[in-house]
Image (spheres, rainbow, N blue to C red):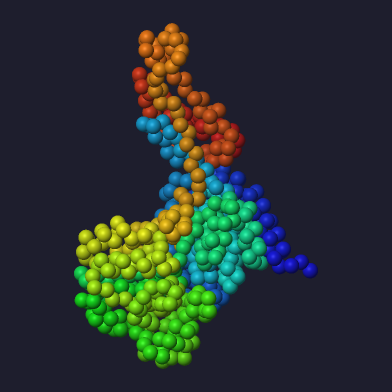
Amino acid sequence: MVDKDLLSIQEARALVRAARAAQPEFAQLSQERVNEVIKAVAEAAAAQAETLANMAVEETGFGKPQDKKVKNLLASETVYARIKDMKTIGVLRADAATKVIEVAVPVGVIAGIVPSTNPTSTVIYKSLISLKAGNAIVFTPHPSARKCIAKAVEIIQGALRACHVSPDLVSSISMPSIEGTNELMKITDLILATGGPGMVKAAYSSGTPALGVGAGNVPAFIERSANVEEAVAKIMSSKTFDNGTICASEQSIVTESCIADKVRATLEAQGGYFLTGEKLEKVKRLMERGNGSMNPAIVGRDALTIAHLCGIEVPTGTRLLISDEQGVGPKYPFSKEKLTALLGFYVVEDWREACELCTALLHNGGVGHSLSIHSQNEEVIREFGLKKPVSRMLVNTPSTQGAVGISTSLFPSFTLGCGAVGGSATSDNVTPLNLMNVRRVAYDLNSQGCSCMTAQQHGAGSCGVSTAPAAHYPPSSALSGSCCHHGASHEAVTAPQQAGGNALDINAVTELIVAELKKVL
């Protein structure tokens, strides 16, 4: 008998070896062929969006099938629409003024960490952006979502086979374990870490470069100039979307005293129920474990289910359970991230006090992530935008849908960076451009300067300034070697002009590069 942890480690190594064998050949394909592959993957995933959604809810118990289907379509159709025209293979651009050619270089094999809250959508999204940049990816699934993740990978592999490329470009550990995940993170080239704080911290501690996310304790500020009915409706649609399983969902409402009664009444009219007395105490006892962490039994559950688990009665049609909260920190559970149908409620005197409170809430487990504001006052919006420690400030839009790119023009993403302040390597909604390096081929600018050589040697005047033309770098030798792993269909670029009428034709340079590339393909 072989222990499960050893089997998991061995499987991680085998999958990475297979991915390493497949990825260089894939990286040699042209941009057009790569685009064909990601289109096929996106279409295959979109066709199974509903099936995967149902599997995810059935296996994990989190969220709503109809909303998980929306997330699967976002991860497939919407992501594809945004990346299909991106240039990610071979020569990216050539700058005529600076005489620099930029070449895309895939990072290689990526480790994809998948959470149980957004399992199938995360697999689809990470597969598309990895393949678009010429990479392979090996997933380590959350154990409670192993089956639906395996199904998503199976669908993607089928699309890869149909495109006559290796299915080993996308794979998943079938026997997930902490040991197997740690091994995967050590032997890959980059980690895409989406999951709990412990897993993200492990990714950053693995010794492998990592793009991780942080917790999203998102405050929603309803300022006095806001359309209250519209603001509450958007918060409701966001917080109840997939039962709050996206980390960009609102965790607390902050509003001003002059409109607090109206906000409260509007919340109640739209399905919010304010907890008090023994009902509140019962919910507080259930929502956290002994160490102060969120109780997984309520994650991704609707308000009526939580009420039932707590043994309390709430009105039929209740969509959110809300608590007036007086402080921020460990003693105030509604001030923390709650990936479920629970919401904190704060009242302040003015926007300046709201500014301070929102900052405190963000530092209570959500710094660097996102903040939502509902306001018609551009001065207040600007002040928040300039000073809040977040990577996304979402204005007059549902926070969940806005952050992931459904209701805004942000890149559609399920990996939302939190920047340095949040302990992340990026503040981006991660795209294919985050999953490749750029090699810069820089040519001499034919600048002239003094040297210790004689004027006769330089062909210069008495000051020693050279007037001789600089030699050009031979492009074929300058770019031979590792860059030959890239596809051979690259666009022509504009030729820069050298000083003194000496032309360096980058069109010709690029043609020579392409000729060298074709020799090794």
